[in-house]
Image (cartoon, rainbow, N blue to C red; front, side, top):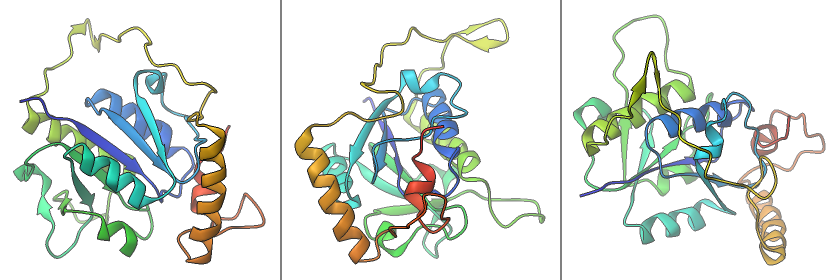
Length: 218
């Protein structure tokens, strides 16, 4: 049986993390990186790997959840909760989408509500309370790949062989959508802001506007 993994990007604060997440996702065989919120994204640090990864956009977490459930996917929150399981015990059953928490506050209540289960990464040293989100993603995605039996990529010398660039995006660092989808996005942003789903800030440099701080060209 062939299994698939997905990464869901929603509430990450640091603007360069999408690029490095894309690099890890490509290295560990992720099928799609799902953006929730805005469609534009910062790919700094991806080292060309975003050309080999399919990006998909949804306006809300519920939209993303419905898509993943249609794919027969479990949604796994990467968070230290009371019922979280160690990721090295491979508590996977089928296709899995990994939702990672914000670097400072972790997964929000809305994010936890769409998760089927949670995993955490055991630590053995005493000097830090948690890992960088991209480091955590790399460990979790590697563990899923081991469990799923993904075939190791061939090597050439001291590096892995990189494929040709098959994936093309309409505009660099942008998930192309229809005019109707753009209208729907504006409606969803107003609704989400009214419910505190994410904040609309007057300045794009505001640290409180997490999605705007993340998905910027540059």
